[in-house]
Amino acid sequence: MRRKSSAVNLFLLPLLHLISEVDSHEMTDQPTKQKLWGGRFTGKTDPLMHEFNLSLRYDRRMYAQDIRGSIAYAKALALRGILSQAEERKIVDGLTAVRKEWENGQFQIEPDDEDIHTANERRLSELIGSLGGKLHTGRSRNDQVATDMRLWLLDEVKEIEASLKALITVMVERADKEQDILMPGYTHLQRGQPIRWSHFLLSHAFSFQNDLQRLRQLIPRISVLPLGSGALAGNPFAVDREFLRRELGFESIAENSMWGVGDRDFIVEFMMWASLTMTHLSRIAEDLIIYSTAEFSFVTLSDAYSTGSSIMPQKKNPDSLELLRGKSGRIFGNLAGFIMTLKGLPSTYNKDLQEDKEPLFDTVDNISSCLRIAEGVIATLDAHKEKMEAALTMDILATDLADYLVRKGIPFRETHHISGRAVALAESRKCQLNDLTLEDYKTLNDKFSEDVHGVFDFEASVEKRNAIGGPSREMIARQINVLRKALAN
Ligand SMILES: *[C@@H]1O[C@H](CO)[C@@H](O)[C@H](O)[C@H]1NC(C)=O
Ligand SMILES: *[C@@H]1O[C@H](CO)[C@@H](O)[C@H](O)[C@H]1NC(C)=O
Image (cartoon, rainbow, N blue to C red; front, top):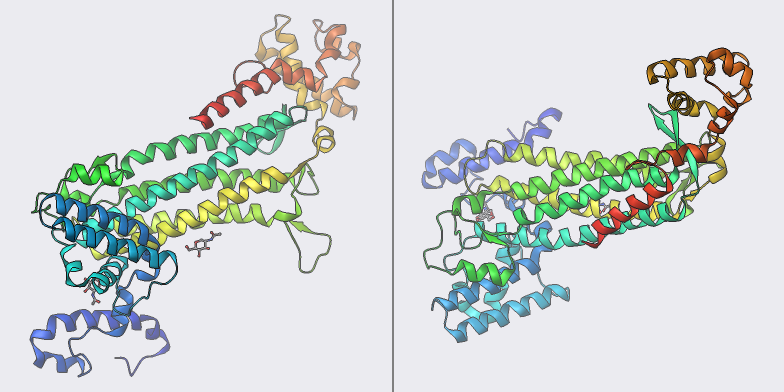
C-alpha cells in the first residue's frame, strides 16, 4: 500500500498509516496475523502514532495549573492518611521544584512525555524517587486534565475581562470628550438622521458591555471542580472534594463523575462567547473601515495601526481593522470545529477530547490580541469633525420637518407625505430644504409658518431626541453613566 503510493493516496497515507497501526495493536496477541500487513508491525507504537498522540507541545502551557491541581490532590490524600505528612511535604516540595523548572525555562522534556501530566509526574519521580508514584492514587488523567483546563480558562477569562473593560473604557472616554461632533447616522448605509459621533461609539460600546456581562456569566459554569471524579466512576479513597474545591478556588463540584470527566461545554460556551464578541469587533471594524475611506474621511487611523501599500504610495490601509474582521471567521471556525468533534462522542472521556486544546488556546490568544488591538485603534484614531459635519445634508432633517407638522396637530402619516413632497421640490430646484421659501412651504401645507426655518438646525434636531436612548447631550451622559457603572462592577 505504501510502496505503490500515487500522488492522490499520498494525502491519504497518514490516515491509512493510522488505521493499520490501530489494527496492529489488536494484533499483538496474534503474531501470525501480522504478516498480512508486513513484518514492520512489531506491536510497538509506530513513531508517527506516538507523535500523533502527543499533546505536550501545546498543553505544556497548563503546567502551572497542573501543578496546582497536584499539590491540592497530595494534600487531600494526606487528609485521608494515604500519604503521611512527611510524604505530603516531600511531594509538595517536589512539585514546587518542578514548577520552578518550568518558570525558569529549565524543564527538560523527554521523548516519552506524552502530555503535561506525565511530564510533570515523571520529573517529580526523578526528583523525589518512587514516592512520586503515590500521587496518582485514585486520580486519573481524565479528571486531572478536565481540572487543568478549567483552572487555566478561569485564569485567562480574568485577563480577557480586563482587556474587554479597557476597550469599553476607551470608547466611553472618547464618547465623553467628543460630544460636540455631529455626524449622519446611517441605515442601509444611507444617510438617515443626524446623531452625535459619541452616540455611534456608544452604540458599539453597549454590544461590548453585553459581552462583558455574558463573559462574567460563564464563570459559574467554568468554575466547577472535576478532580475526584477519577477515570469515570469516582474516587475510591473518599477524597474530600469539598476540601479540593476550596483549595483550588472552584465555585462548585462536579456532582456526577461521568459528567465531570466528559463535559467540555464550558469550552464550547467560551468559544460561543468569543465568536459573538468577535462579531461585534468585526462590525465596528467594518464601520471604521468605511469611515476611513477617502470618500467618507470621517476618521484617520494612526500610523501605528495602518500599513502602506507595496505598490501604491498614496495608500494607507486599515489592516488592523481588516484583521479584526478577518479573525472573526477563524474564531467561529474553532467553535464549529470543536462542536463537530463533540457531537456523537460516547459518554465520559474519549481521546477526541484532546482536540479541545488547540482551538481553545487559539481562541484565547487571538481574541486577547484582537481586544487589545481594537482598544489601540480606537484610542488613537483621529475623528474629523469638519468632514462628518460636511456630510450632514438638509435632507436628513426630512423626518424633523414631518415632526414639525405633527407638533402642529397633523397626523404623522400625512406629514411624512408632505415632507416627502418638500424633498422632491428641493430636488427639482436642485437646492436644499432650507433654501425653499416660506411661500414654497405654504403651497405644500398652510400650517407651515415663519418658524419652519428653525427645523434646519442639526444640533437642535439631535437635542430634541431626548428620550432615553437618544443622542441628546443629556442622554449621552446617561449612557456613559450606565457603562461606567457596568465597568465598576
Ligand atoms: C497516547 O497517549 C495516552 C495519554 O494521553 C497514553 O495513555 C497512551 O499510551 C498513548 N498511546 C500511544 C500509542 O502512544
Ligand atoms: C492566534 O493563535 C495562534 C495559535 O495559538 C498563535 O500562534 C497566534 O500567535 C495567535 N495570533 C494572535 C494575533 O494572537
